[in-house]
Image (tube, rainbow, N blue to C red):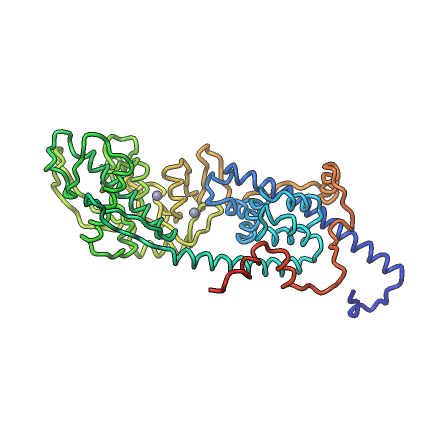
Length: 460
Ligand SMILES: [Zn+2]
Ligand SMILES: [Zn+2]
């Protein structure tokens, strides 16, 4: 105890008084940890049941908005809450006030159901600093094991292509997870494109009228394996045709929508809204895509022939977009604050809404979808403030009013913990440590289940 800055020399009565104060701190802290366990249980349930889904990108974003946590702390709470779902021993130790939230937070970074028991002992025996150091050492071992695993996987990548006796080409291989994911995505896109072509060809079209892939389409619908094979052929042809170049990101994700003017103005009006590939999208989706886009207006005669093509214009001109970015500084949806987004016309331009600052609000992609397709409403108040409502009409406050707290929250918390059968005193969370030096290398050696495998395997 460092009392050097205090003028008063402690008398025995003072020391007793300070001892009592210290016990009080330890006791209340254990009560708060026990309450934190309950809080994490609630967060885990809320998260699992998607309670945050009504307008928020994640459970952490909801916590930031609703209880005022900073985003980092909110993400950490959700992570710990989820982890404790499969770590009952650590969860129980926190719920009984035996381990502090800090220790549990550190231990859940590495604990698995298999290692939970021994890590719990580490938490009980050591101080928060010991726990933190052991967890860091543990993660180092994990990273080494992981790096070796990933090197091994990377080396094992392979693709064999050979021809069998009847001339068919046989493919067999192992791809790294990310290359495999791209392949699977491309195969899916290829299957969808071929399926679309198959639908577009009227039944009476002779086979020589087929699109240029030259695939023979039999009467029976192709099996999944056959579709995959056709899709791979299409991907390969497309790659060779366009040159092997992934292209600029802007081009890759460009979406073209053909939409009838009356559909843009009124989602219930008859008319079409179709993506370039022929996929139909809802009128609400086409309104969202058109809300902030460049557009080319084409006029058709009743037979569908194009009679007039206008110049390409940006719905929101660059100068106005800069002003919008400057004013809104990111998504305006309550609790979001993502620093970039799209310009949303509060009254859609197709309905005569002007493209002016007062009729625009910046919304991120997620929340732009929420207002167009999920029934959220936004309006500008006479004082210029935006007001958001849920699909059921309920107001969504920018900053919710804090929950009411009983007049003596500490006493209430204690009473609740005791009512739940907890026995918490000043010794509940005291570590078993007696001041000996922590031998980190030894501790990791005996604790981490994979250290032995590192010793046996040659370094790579
Ligand atoms: Zn919009
Ligand atoms: Zn947003």
